[in-house]
Length: 570
Image 1 (cartoon, one colour):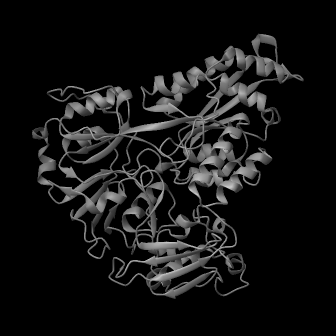
Image 2 (image 1 turned 120 degrees about the vertical axis):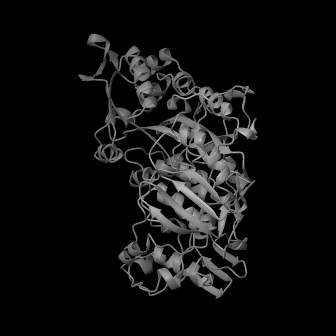
Image 3 (image 1 turned 90 degrees about the vertical axis):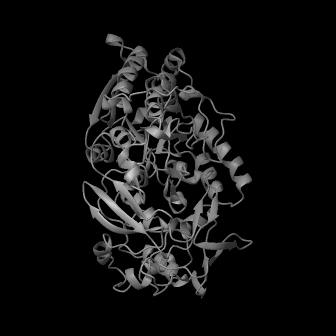
């Protein structure tokens, strides 16, 4: 559960994917464009190809005048822009512009080189050797070498480190000894030369390549005041970042915008667009796009939004499925929820299709496995879709000993079947509650919802265990291992399945993608039979961007950051 709670802090990465302000609906602005462009298709039949702008002559004057600046929206971050130390996903969005990893991922989540020119993995899959590109520099012009990579990995093992990178999952040899103060260096980290670093681990881990090859911190800048056990000084550097990403921080105006300027030292060459801005002003995202104040935004992929955006004429549109998934967590600390028949009944008894596809107007699809359809690991083979079946739900509850009682509420051993459901406050949540209440009461369950405007209050309630069901979404899931990590006996509170534990370890224990596909298929089938969550939805988004912007190719795992260097304005 601790890891679950940590992942919830990164919820801001969902949906916006470095776009931000993605929950605004164009219909909310109350304005219609003067001339409506014909809608080419329904949102349900959209592919992933770009729908080009129909009338570029409608380009707003504000956008025409902005010839050297690209503007996207973002929820205002806290200002902790140091990777591995950021306090929210919004901070992480900013860090992704300022810093760069050795290894990134393509549109299917498979690793590809970035700052690293190549890598080699030993036959026993325990040693990783990264070869850096020649001539790498940080944004201050200082060289980026293997020493900086070693420094970054070292401070992540420091006993005072409390950020979101779980480096200990990679099991670097000697890492634990360093954390405990039993060693001055980490035995498994060896700098061979300025361009080569060798990292030896003690256990095979399929996520190690990306974790070890994460964003790099400058030893000269972030390490000059480093004393083991004392990382507080890095907080003073959060607002003055030095990275190796495509842009440098120019200014952060809280509540207004974050300004970036092209990094002339970027390894792939200085970006063609001189300035990039994250607009953090609260307001109507559609209006910002319509007036030309903003070049890029994301919206729920509803038919209403598609039609309204196409009427603008000057925006390109692209459908994207999020790499995250929405879920409803069971509180496995509740004795009655330890019975998988009850959990299965709660899934059969909930009309997810009507809620997810109907209420969302097609902007989401029902989820049945803990990985997005964008992933190489996704499969529906052998998966029970748990189609809405109240009779089946009633049968399972009867078999579990929950019999119809007074006022139609089921009872067992004198206890009424009452479900306390927690969620954030939103229009979608309101719609969910209305249907869920009707669904569950129809099978003899008293449904008591509680909504929270403040996420921290919701999180505190969940941490305290004062709930039966709670609705959340994951952060972006780059590797399928992250989508199942919370289901192991070690991480889960109350949920324990030896087969699940075994398959989770097997999925991490090989680097062979084909073998991992088979392992995760078996794991998803087991989780389908013994559900730890109600897997709920995969969100779909419409990316809308000003047609004067060329070269933009959003990545479902890395957002727009990976294409920033190649963007141009025409």
